[in-house]
Length: 190
Image (cartoon, rainbow, N blue to C red):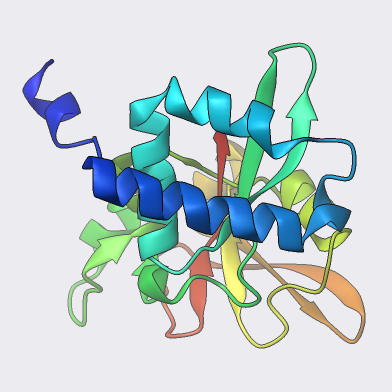
């Protein structure tokens, strides 16, 4: 195993605890995946230690990942952060490294794009964020950065979403901005 992959594994105890937590969340929230069975999900997870590590990172940062779908074309389960509010361990981040480096003072410690990559997940797109909101009410008090199209990003902007007044809103901000109530949600294909 390569050095980078070595640290991206869980101990057997961590693996067992995470699988138990994911299984309990899966069973408690069947409305998110009514036609899926946990034993098939677990089998895929056990065959993918690096993906299980990524789920552990989502969990540690407050994401409460859960299965929200199955891609028949790729035969992959889709895990998304289902925490009621934007994951607490991922707030106070500007959008990307370019935005972080552009700040002259009061720099945040990290940025959303790099954090997602370090965790081995992708940031939700606006469409994926809207699909998640079909499964419940998320980000009622917080907001989440979403993957921003290049034409917007090249002009210095970035997109974020939230849910207010029973609707999902998409906003823009300077990519270098950051707030204690804005993080990001990830998606992981297993």
